[in-house]
Length: 464
Image (cartoon, helix red, strand yellow):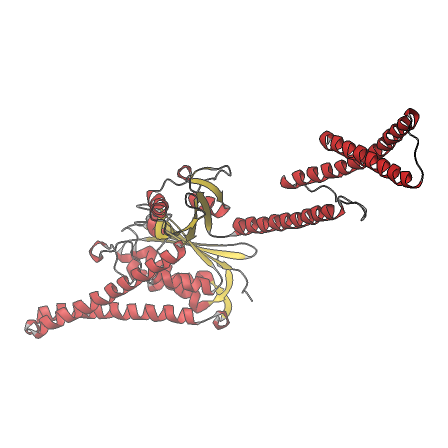
């Protein structure tokens, strides 16, 4: 400002001298001027006084203008650091009015853009927070810049919000390989990865997106989709086809084999004929039981709650009837059966479906029990629900198998030769469907070599 002020004073002094000289020349044309020391001194004094007044006025204007410029400069600096001071207000006659309006408009535009960016960032973070897909952003230094809670849940650990190497969060080789392949090939990758093995199986589909920001800078977006349920359904479908084919093939093969043997001449031996016909009859009955079980499952699935025929059922009488039907099997295995059910307990349920549930649970408790073992049947009730428990002291069920025993055709031993008890593998699947149809639940507690306890929970009053 000092340099500008000095230049302005010089220009004003020269301007005043030139103006006075021009005035003297004009006066000289009309009237001769008698020069003297006093006149020259007066002229110099006049030039000096005029220069002082004009200089003071110009200095004041320059000072005020500089204040305005300083305010604009300060405002622009604050805007660069995301601060938004009040607008600069100047009269329209001010030379810096247009400039101040431009700065104010720029500040308003930047303020609106900043608010818009903040709103978009909040929306993005809100979406990321509730997105069921795990998301992680990795930069060209292999550092994690962003991740969402779903990613922490899938990786079973807390992810630091401060930038850090992704290997601190991801130690699974298959997942790190997907990320490194993306960096090496600069192409998107996709792979199905098992994060957690059985029994708590967790399978994800890992997808990476390579984003090239510049020649040396890039980002990788890692997304993990939890497909455990889909994977388990596919596995169950494969097992269903395999088990169903196995269960159908075994009796049919036996029937065909023994029939061919009889036709080959074995029918001429009465003893062999009786033996083979009995085997054919048993295998035919097994095939009939299998088909009936499959049809039962289909009928249960096809029916809805409106098909339930609800009525009051005396629970102890129902259990006693089923025990009498299976009395021969109980005596053959020398089992002790205890029915701890009060005579007064009456429940509202579909008697036919409840009878099927009781039949299958008691049948399993007998078949999978040890010779001389015990079967305990009990029932209790609460204000809203009642519970039927069937406990045995049999071979038990392993922890891995407990998660799948209600699947169709599932058998604890995949090899038929290793199965302790023959069957279709549909009994508990039927029980599960029937209990669900009556708005109930079934649970299992078992230990290998100790025994199994099945508990059915049903509403005390029919559900609307």
